[in-house]
Image (cartoon, rainbow, N blue to C red; front, side, top):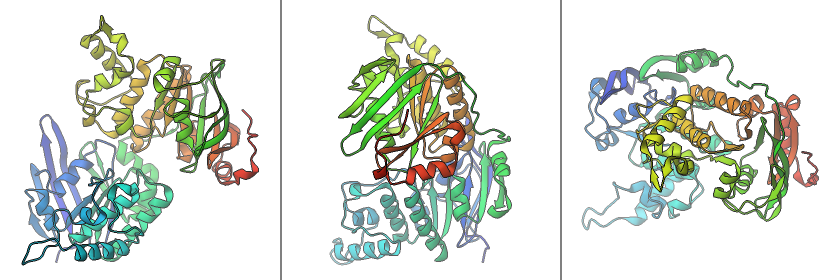
Length: 506
């Protein structure tokens, strides 16, 4: 009997002009949670697709329980006991949980071939209870949260008797409490003997769950270590190929005149009595626990949603921003939290995405100049370090970090003074984070006013000149840079807002 439930030796996968995997090795033991880490573009996605039978490798060998295997399609991999849970759950939102769990392998009568609904509901309920879920198997899938949909995906894997479960960035869209629930489920599966490959950019995921970690870089295998035997700095060097000595490159900038003032802003049911100002060259952090109302405030400032209380002033003039087009015209830009759904048109080229906010600059008599678009987008893409073969490549072909840089490039084509950044480093690797922090610092140094929304405490403390803290739709503190500590921010984020009477000073 082999020591490993899964073993890959020298796996290579080549696409036209690109070596997506180059001599990769990986070993997974029974009952083990093994973290796989690497920058976006390191080869992790292709690695998953080789294991699950989506892609056939061009070189190397794969072994399952010591036996050499070669999957021709995903169905063969599923039958062999391999399942993958992805960050963006693919489901049938209008069907029930039971139907999603058993899609493609329904329980049917041997005689009549009819679907055995009672048996399927009962088995679905057993699987959900085993995973600690509280919702009914008859619930419509689309009514569930992202975390609950992931539980359904895990139940589906177990319904097919999966012994190896690949979790691809499962915590990226989850709250801290939801992540803890997922950790407990992963540990429960491990204790039952399932083996888990846990892919994540978050070091806390690795330290919380995994006993082993493997690192890929530039499509190659770098090494495998016990989690308790590798330090954070060494892991970063393995992932990015260099030492990142200053992850938060906050530069001292000259703070200029006031650009934006928000006074007693409110939107019934979402937030109330929000007051702050933002000055030229300043990075103002906006933080708080998930659900505190940060994104809703930003969306109201940008005109996505109407506020019904308070006033916004821009460059000294009081106004009411009714829509994003008006906000952009004034000089306010917004980088949304979900870049794929709200920040990019995935089936368009990099160039067209970059120039989208300011097409009038590239048009004459109603006709777009492709040459001018290409020149401008190429210049901005190079300036921000977007890694791509050409600006005519589809933006969907880029890694998460490079997609985020394209969204930044979009903002720079418009004539802006204020840029709202909502979770700008969410779901990107440590190397891409460092590059994005450089971009933010350079923008502030160039005179932009930056409103930085983030759930990551080190990011907020490392990058901000001041920090506004929110809890349950209200501001509880405005902290100066010299006051920024995790303790001070957490205290402000968790105090009783009933004791706050809108007295936070600008």
